[in-house]
Length: 259
Image 1 (cartoon, rainbow, N blue to C red):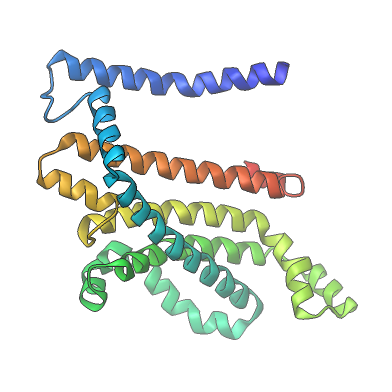
Image 2: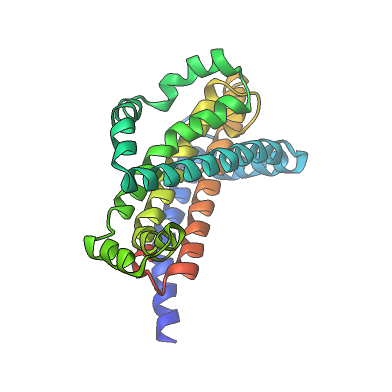
């Protein structure tokens, strides 16, 4: 009972500032201090969102963005974790990849958008490439740090037991890297989500970023705000779901993943 009461109080503390912000937004919109064209109230934005949802337009654009993020982020996680494992294990791989990765990491993904449009055109290939460029390094660097948590004693134990490589990865390297992997995946998703929406503002024919750009050209501030709020809510929901899933699957053995 005490735990439930404490949780309710915490949720209330979290919700109150948001409620106050929405109330302030409505009061400013109704006061006439700012033109309704520039700042429609939350009720007007909610009504516009309901109409877009009912017409299917909002769902179609959200589905396009989610499909891109699903493919691109899966590629980033797979490539980032695999390369991190190879770099941590083999000095030759580290020497060969250190300089190219260091140079590529300094280039903002959106700076490559014009080049990617020339190469790949305006479509999913460009958007997915930007997602990979934005999220690869957070995943890779955190995974690399995790794999390097394996100590010399762990390596000696593996040699003494004559563990095959797959057993070494499953039983020693992966458990040592789990907390860093979870952090890297979570950070990488945030980077990829923001980069995707920005890329859709520049080079896309669908998606939430495209919806915002199209609404701006039509001078529909209410639709722009609907797009921004949906981006925020979807990103928050996916991050929350990942946190809960990680806590449920790994929380007992790795309490730090719930932090």
